Length: 447
Image 1 (cartoon, one colour):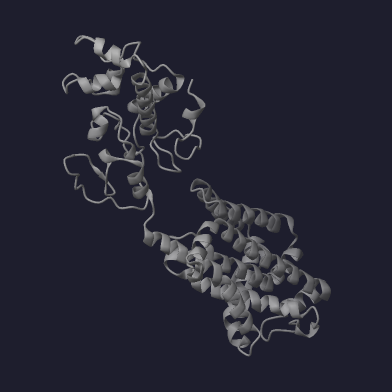
Image 2 (tube, helix red, strand yellow; image 1 turned 120 degrees about the vertical axis):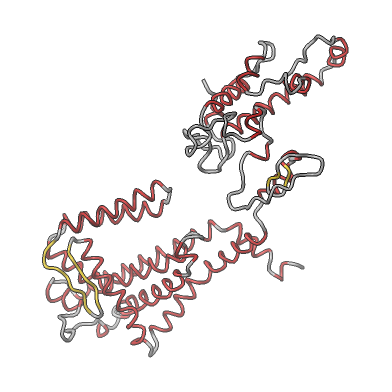
């Protein structure tokens, strides 16, 4: 039975998976177990050598006496005498030389099992010591500690070797000359990467608050009509997305959205399939945000399509115009916090999304926030060549009161602001170490 320590990854302490390496930290299980067995053997040899009678026993040994430890036998054996695979070495060991502690026996058993199984899913026929293995693996001896894992974002330099040693080089550090300092240097992020990450943290601190402030100044100025030309499309997309979630066909356009008169369940099934595929992909790739968004939209679609009546669905679609400006505007601003390396980050799309989202949010929220004290700003009336406005349709057709109309828009806007503030606070909490480093780097902290 394997000990508890053998069931967890030695690097990140997570439960082991049925593969050759840890998917989280990249450490290869077989090499880590071999390293642990070698370290335990070295500690036992050091304890044996430090005993008072070690020198007397060493002097009393004859030339026919075999060394007591496998490491001593390995140093005394020639290249022809040394059994290369681990299984041969294990069979050559006597009962006296076998590992005595349960941890050593478990590590040796894990190393023998790893020798017999493939090293990677892409090469099912390659095993440690097999034809496609590296020279170090075919030799059968445990690898140097520096080869347990490699930095994910580092580039390995060409094999230039080391003076007087043929050992391979690992990111500029010879693996044969491994020590703690070289290991830290090899795995430490470069200064350029750290500076780039610190710059990203500064941007995430200031961009969204600045965009909200500038958008508020623009919406409340005389440029409101020009801004409406941009936010109008977010308004219409809000109508369309609400209709799709309710099982209705909708085509957004400038100043109006064409909406079907009956539910299309085949279209609802296609949308549910796409959301399910998105959720499943996020679960496979461990993207928790994708899983949360996909599952939430599936629940909303189920309620809007199968639970709501047709009249309530049409009322929700009318409400989804300005409500869509609030919700979609918040989502567009939140895309600024996407992970580095994604398409929104590398192509700069998040900069345009955060600007459009901030303008759309304030264009919708400012109207209903002002309507709490001035009902004249509520957009009642009829749109020429289209139909009643959304506010008039909700009050006159679906029986909403004026107070309910204002209250629901304001509550939704405050909820969106709260969600955006929570996301901002979570970002600050996650990057608190880099924020402290940035504060220590300020000029007034020098003296």
